[in-house]
Amino acid sequence: MRVIARLWLGASLTFAGISHLSFSRQEFRAQVPAWVPVDEDLVVLASGVVEILLGLALLFAVRRWRPIVGVVVAVFFVAVFPGNIGQWREHVDAFGLDTDGKRFTRLFFQPVLIAIALWSTGGWSWLRDRFGR
Image (cartoon, rainbow, N blue to C red):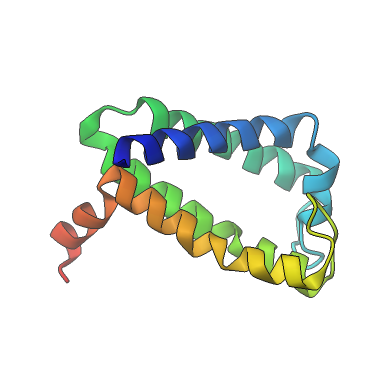
């Protein structure tokens, strides 16, 4: 199950990153919160490249590096979470999230992605071993 989850997450991140750079670029631009002091397009392009790299790392990293990759992916999901909050607070429609209820519900999936990233790669154990309980 862990392998399947890691491969699914890696493929999903890679696909999402490619979509940032191509066919969904405008929708991703709409999700950049107004308070971000960087050009929307730059944020979308940079996050797309990061997602591709993280996705490929999840797919192809050797076993020794997978826990670290999982932790980095989890940190990435934490870093982009304010954008999800911004989409909800600013009432931005994108990717079928066209009501506040749908946008609010989406907020609960980010912790699930963080948990999958850590669980599927052994990141939980790696963190526990390095930083204690």
